[in-house]
Length: 133
Ligand code: HEM
Ligand code: HEM
Image 1 (cartoon, protein in one colour):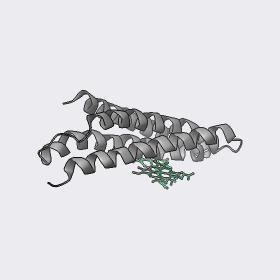
Image 2: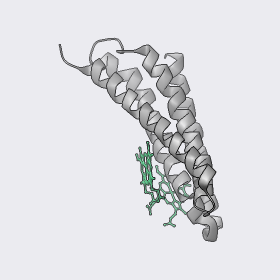
Image 3: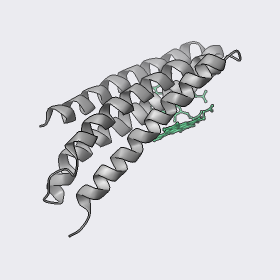
Image 4: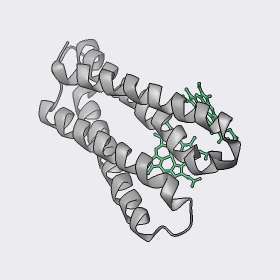
């Protein structure tokens, strides 16, 4: 398995653990749960689930279509953008829920943009890899 695939899978599992720890904390402290809801949801869905799909997808989809991945470089750049974006979102989100949020609002928007770019890169890379002919 390629090293970058292992990194995707490793980060996916780490986000899973962090996501459910936050979820468990939300059960224990329901009054504060609203602050952490978005971080919990995105650690699990954008961290665990999406990162797992990136890793497994990059590993098996080229094999299914009998070709090499379109761009190994995009695969690596996307990894760093996806992680930087998610970590930025997860850290800044609880602060923006608090009200006085201008600085964290900017961090959130910037991080969300990184996440968005990483998803677009994934889409391009996979579509170019599996395209017929
Ligand atoms: C130990 C495991 C988990 C615990 C203790 C937990 C706990 C929670 C809690 C307390 C809430 C807030 C519920 C509310 O106030 O309405 C919540 C919401 C949510 N959780 Fe989890 N969670 C866990 C795992 C997961 C996993 C694995 C996923 C996704 C793969 C997930 C996805 C969500 C989503 C999407 C919401 C928002 C639901 C909505 O929009 O109302 N959770 N979770
Ligand atoms: C660029 C990536 C993404 C961005 C910027 C983003 C942004 C957001 C925002 C701003 C909200 C509303 C949060 C609030 O209530 O204040 C939200 C909610 C939600 N997002 Fe995302 N999202 C992204 C990716 C995803 C993905 C990939 C999934 C699922 C696979 C997902 C699932 C959800 C769910 C289930 C909610 C509702 C959570 C709740 O009930 O509070 N998001 N997202």
